[in-house]
Image (cartoon, rainbow, N blue to C red; front, side, top):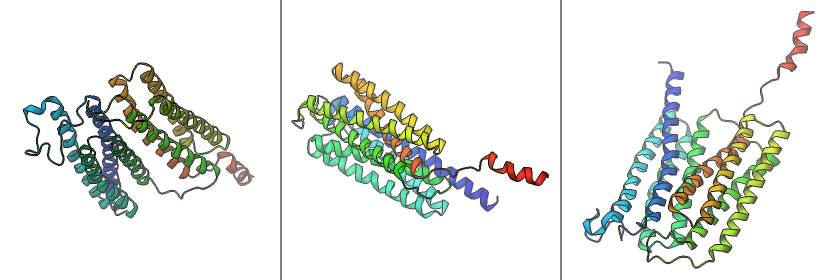
Length: 308
């Protein structure tokens, strides 16, 4: 095996690990949502133990204890994936991949601690929001890790990149406002948990307004990229993001006007994770465009001259 083949193999292994990290960090959002939507948020009433006497749930805690404890066990899956990702990144010999993998690995125990604090403060909605937003950051970092595996491309500058950063920033504002709306709504994770006390109607309207801004800026970015004949991959990624935004918005409106059914709220959480990944990918594609390929027309004069 040549050195080049060995490096390709190691990069392929790192890519698999990066995809595993991305999928796992999105799924932990969905499973965490399932804990809340089933009212199992305090199924294990303390942390790091499930109860004061045991690390595992006992019969008196019932199904809620099993669900909450099962979600805690998924943290160990994330740890295993993070370790494998770091080892795969280390084997590539590339410093930027090692740094990203280390940050991803450190994010998992930090997430576990925040989750534990969330339980200890009886599912305070602001702590729950922080718990979710950290997962979104880890999703974005996983996408960055995957992008770094490709041939490094210098970062571009200019109005298109600034607009892409704007879409990214507004996307995260939309995500955070969604957590505030959730904190004012009925799905607390436990029947006795207090909500944040904010008006759900007013904050839902603000959240919807931010979604319209998010969609409008994405349309503007796509149109600007198309007009400037930018990297085709960046254009495709932007229109794909628009499609995901419209689908997520449709789910959001339906769930709002149907009384927030648990299944739709779970789908909306999955969509939030996918949107975090897609928005990050658009930013990276615009910021690191593929080098322009020489056009065939440009070589025709040279070819004509050589044939004279």
